[in-house]
Length: 227
Image (cartoon, rainbow, N blue to C red):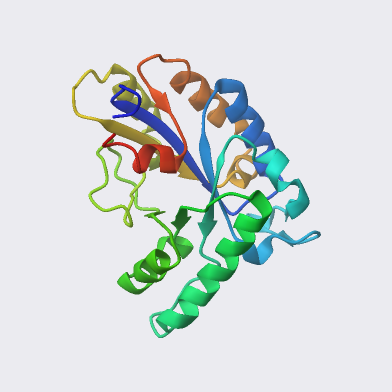
């Protein structure tokens, strides 16, 4: 349970980029918390990428602490780790990015997301060796059940899921005694690609402001549900 509450809402957004600024402002306005999973490989000034043809510029690292203030930073694995990549190489890559994030934010990095949602026992072990305590997949459960394993955290749904509004209503109406978690994931640039920033604002508005719901980052929710 979380501060005596048995319902928790948390958000998890990947990759970073200039569209994160708009998303952070929205979360702050509604009193919501997010874990932003950043890739150390692209965190350089003037770096850019083009998902679905949309030009996304990366935020200079010097601006990170101010922009993401009040939210959690976790590690996004830098690339798909093929099964023939050795454990030592995987651990070296994770350590490099984790240490860079910790230097920038001056805080401990506890979580990570798997590259393209692709995970294996080898990546899990490498993460644990690096001091990572939990990891999120992209396998939506469309439910609110707690994860059985902290290195296979399956979110409730992607923000674009057609049935998300029914899930919101079900979560708000839930009055059971068992703890439940509503975890929404995605990439902030998708709202620009789909021209639907109104969707995330509607979602924030519907979920916020409830006295019986705990609003926290991924680590606050997933590492503290037994406290």
